[in-house]
Every structure is written in C-alpha cells, then in structure tokens.
Length: 287
Image (tube, rainbow, N blue to C red):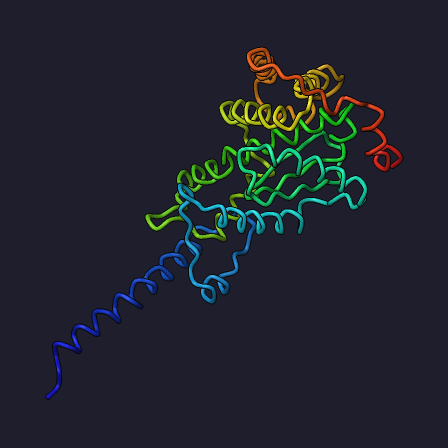
C-alpha cells in the first residue's frame, strides 16, 4: 500500500530545500536584468554557479566586507588606477600602515596599502581595508607624521564603515535593494563608483578625523602632523588639492582636531624627522 503520509512529508521537505533557493536565484537575476548599472556589464554565470550571493549591508560580516573589497580593488586596478611599482616606497608605506592598523579600531582586518602613480594630492579607501595613496600626496607631506595622519584618516573611514553605509543608502535610493538584500555584483559596482567619486559627508569626515587622531596617537606619532598637513595644503596657491576639495569644512575640521588634541594631549613625537622622510621617499623625489 502506498504511504501517502510519507510522500506528503517528503514532498514538503523537498520543497523547502529546493523551492526557496530557486526563488532567490530568480529574484537576484531579475534584479540584475531590470536595473543594470550604466556602462557596466554584469556577469550572471558566477551568480548561478556559486549560488546567489545576496548581501545585507546593514549587518555585513568582516569576511564579506573583505571579499567585496577585493573585488572592488580588482575593478579599480583593472581600469581606473595605475599603481606606483617602486618596491622601496611601497614597503615604506606598508610599514607605516601596519604600525597604524595595530592601534586602530579594527586591528584584525587584513589591510592593504597601495601607492597610486598620480600627481594629484589625494587618498581614498574602500571596503575590507583597502587604502590608496597618490604619489602626489607623498610628495606633498613634509614628514612621516603628516603622511601617517592621512593614512590614519582613511583607516578611520574603514573603522567607521562609512563606505558600507553609503553603499546601502545608494542602493535603497536607487531602488536596487530588495527585501532579500543586494546582489553582490551590484554592490561591487556601487562600491567602485563611490570609492572614486564619493561625496564626502560632513559627519563621516569628522568621524574619520577623530578615529584617525586616536589611531595616530596610540601609534606614537606626533598629533600635530594631522593639523599641519591640512593647514599646509590650504595655504598652497592654485586650485584646492583633491584630498581637501572632496572633504567639506576643512577649517572646521582643523578646529575640531585642535580641540581634541588639547583635551587629550600626547607626548608622542614620532615621525617629525623631515630628512629621514625624504630619504624614504627618495625614488619619488628623483622621478
């Protein structure tokens, strides 16, 4: 005699096991097909083969953030950015970065520090610990403390997950996020766009400044480096450097940093030796 009760029970288990993942595939693919990013072609095959990777940016894990950051980095290096390949300068920047990360809000994140071959005075960061510093910025700094202050500021953005929050806001505003979350390829596309053309919010910049100053202080660097670098760039003639033109309220930020330094002074004075700094970036000066 056929066991109808057993058949019905097994059918329900099978439906739960296969039906809902299938719906997820359909939802993710319809999202990609109906809302393509301008000028970008999404590769759907990896989504099908690897299973749909739907992200909830509101509670993204460190591992997910690092994986997305790696993809964003590959996109940026593939078409947008040319790296500066001198091993001596890269080692020096990575050494500073490691010292700062150890004293940062997220010391266990696998940070990656890269030097961009570009004379613009600029720096930016993406998800998962990826920090980019232009050669123009290295040349503009007078000492290691000033360079470290910029790196600490970018580490502060990663510590505060500012880009993650902006990606989520952009996805919601653009109608790209669904109840299930945001497809990973779409998230990468948004991340690349925001990393390279990110409008800087006043709140995020103040937060990155404060986080960066704490990191700089814990690492033993001279706190003054963060203030003197901003002041120097503002006094330069000509157009405002990219690093400051995309960071609103610079004079207010300097005042905020001074107040923070006065309230929590430090005896740390590492990184003020100008001669030592110029020696470490000598290949840049010669080029």
